[in-house]
Image 1 (cartoon, rainbow, N blue to C red):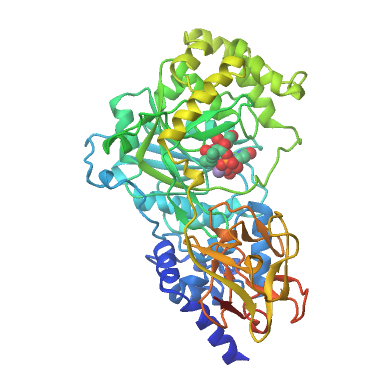
Image 2 (tube, rainbow, N blue to C red):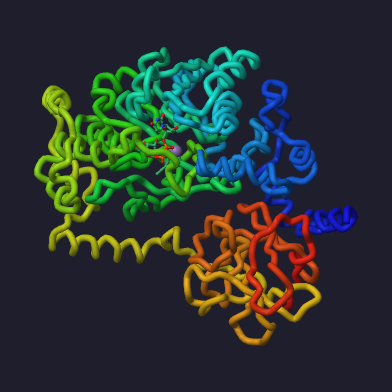
Length: 574
Ligand code: LR7
Ligand code: MN
């Protein structure tokens, strides 16, 4: 049994050169950290994973024991990302340098200001938060880093604050300063709390689950040095929540819709014509919210944040409108790159269960949007009688700062936003026609197929098939007698997706694999195998393998720990 296991894992291990190379690239470890000695009981690197870490990066998400499964399940519940993988990754891992090549030779001014990096967190996973901190320490020149301020927003994970504090002391991270709020404030007031403790000339806000990339800070600081009313953002790269793979984001700027939801959009036609355009700062109507730099004095002058906002949501549009309407500018700096874990869901609510996004958005609408607020209110009938607190001091601020009105903002900063009127609809068509001519929308790129085969359970004549019609989203999988025809043909893409009959992608669902719309984000739709006969089919996000329940017609196909090869060995039949 042991030897079967070994050869089985060897099989996965040597699966394909590309698999190995790409994973090594993403997960290369530059040095081992010593968190284990700080928290010996935390099981941060189990014996299994530490050997896997050094020798075999393919196995980064592999579930080998029920303990692995437990850590992973609990992590998803509390954090909504794969903490098993985060625990196994070095705090100092290398990530791909996603900058445009022209950024790499850029020389920046030599009198750049010092920044205070401010990170507030609520129930963040310790090791993920530490990786955020280490990435900043590793990739920020010390003459540009005043301090890193961590604000624990009254997390209720036991000992999180204590463990963090112990780590900071033991590792002698002298310019990392840890604070705690007296009660759960929400991210807006927690950031304000951090900003007030800071000493740097520039405030640099980050989420608590990010990794900053090479040369991230210089281009941000330079834009502020040029003009203190420039508020600047990095490009937010993607850290996959299931696999922690780091990948580049396209050049997209911030917009919003009349539901007051933030949206990513292609920059307007004509913005990206020459090579240099891809590294020049791009004006952005709004910010996503979590990652930006602002001169501290300027931040105070324009009214910090609306401290009346609770927990989560809306503050990003508020500060965006305010910056533009009150004389500043907001821009995206393509040479600065920071990866952020984009979760599938937000794993927390507000303590009183209220919809804070709606509460905060109403404050935005009533303070900044003049009569245009009706477009929002008309879309949200539930907003009409919803309390939004006292906004008088924010209205007063707007008056004192002598800000432009919202009509000015729409005309000069965001003319692309269609109004929900007939005229607006006409405009919308015009913009989207222009877009289509110019760009291949980044989320609709063509799929590249690299192989095709049916998937047969080894030593049987049973093939993986859809339970329902192959066009039906969400259908599970079963074994059926192998037969010719497209219904059992899986098309493999260059992103390691398996697309049944070129229609839907094989996706690891909650417990079982299903067919689902291809999302091109890897992770739960990313499958690895060694090709040919007698191979395992391993899912990167699940950390487990495709397996039949039993060797019979109509047996369900599920996901199992990879160490049981009996019903998890497949032939790829061309
Ligand atoms: O009560 C809370 N207290 C906190 O300290 C709730 C949250 N937080 C912390 C939290 O630990 C995290 O570090 O605040 C930070 C942001 O919370 P997330 O990560 O749950 O938010 P998000 O990434 O889903 O949401 C985006 O929109 C928010 C609107 O309020 C904030 O502006 C986030 O900073 C923002 N994140 C980004 O812009 C990253 C890119 C994502 C996009 C789009
Ligand atoms: Mn976030």
